[in-house]
Length: 183
Image (cartoon, rainbow, N blue to C red; front, top):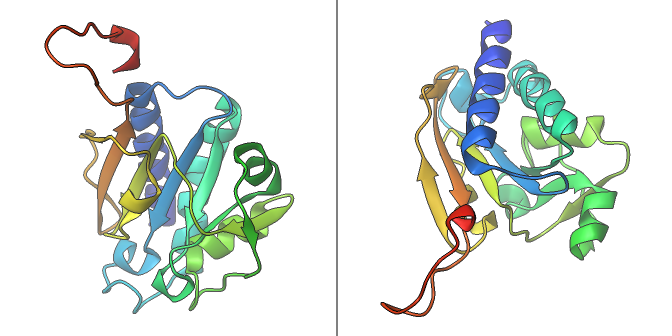
């Protein structure tokens, strides 16, 4: 079961990165309910094993491309995000003092915290793309113009996924011309 979850997570992040066209140094957010993956109601059946499987599926793909991972915590930590200190400093995010655990922050954020070289928490980010696994509401952590992305995969475990990329705003009206590569 956990090998399947790992494979689904890897497939989802690979497909989304292909569409989103992220570059080295960009920021990618994942909100993940391990409870939903296991077929339980969000927050009611945390699974460190499911979280670890998702992490093992996504982290190598992101690392290979030089893309920073931000793991959204649950509502008990106000959906703060766990990331490498290097990323927080690069983007100028204010670091806050909290350490997630399975029942306050969530299993996935805890797994990311435990696997970071220098983990930190921040309250707000503006990622270029992300995956919401199990209705965790990542929209608040995406850049302003989010574009839904449909993948060939619809679930990770039992959890539905919703993916998004972002694009710059179109401004100027009917006389404006736009750069195709920025869409």
